[in-house]
Image: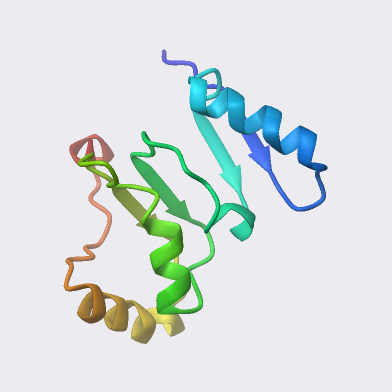
Amino acid sequence: EDKHTVSRIHGDMDQAQRDEIMYAFRKGATRILITTDLLARSIDVQKVSLVINFDFPKSLEQYYHRLCRSSRFGCKGVAINFMKDEEGPLLEECREYFSTAIDELPEELESLF
């Protein structure tokens, strides 16, 4: 059974707390980072292979800033989007604008990695 360390960052934390958590994440001491849009533009980590959007982004720009954290520096990246039916039109807009496939989540998640 694999064990993964998890950390979280949000706007109610002071900068010193956020810096400490980001240092641990960059060094691999924590493997999973849960955050709000606080880091959507400012995070700069080379090995983000998975982004999970619990709330689907509200715009193309927000989608880009969240997802450009994966698949950077020549690495393969995966995004999982949880969404409501009414968010379908924005998903289609993202598919077209970014010229990318956004498929339904396969039953075998291991196939993504």
